[in-house]
Image 1: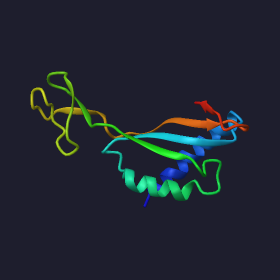
Image 2: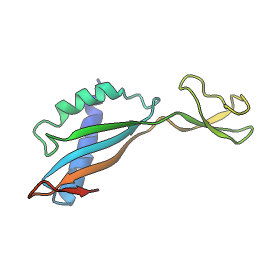
Image 3: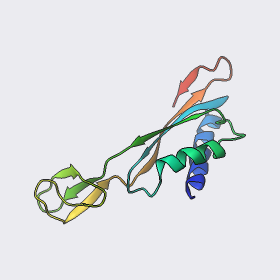
Image 4: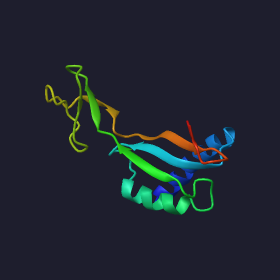
Length: 123
């Protein structure tokens, strides 16, 4: 279950952001995951519940946004979405494509909570 190490890396980054801005805690992490990232969103959520324990993100919510697989055709130049197991151009059907999206795992945003009153600090 490499999702636990992925969660720890995401939390390390989020906690560094919280420390930089002197936030009391983290309210929410938003991550974007592509189907070719090698990360299973369900397992990531389970791992997040374990990884956040005892940190400033102990009560944080993990929001997972899924992205589509996208390719750019080297023959016709079109960029299109396609299924993860069929990386061909949806316009001309050529298999000479370059992956342009769908393999990412991105920390999109971190919601920081202020020391008093739990008002959100957007970051």
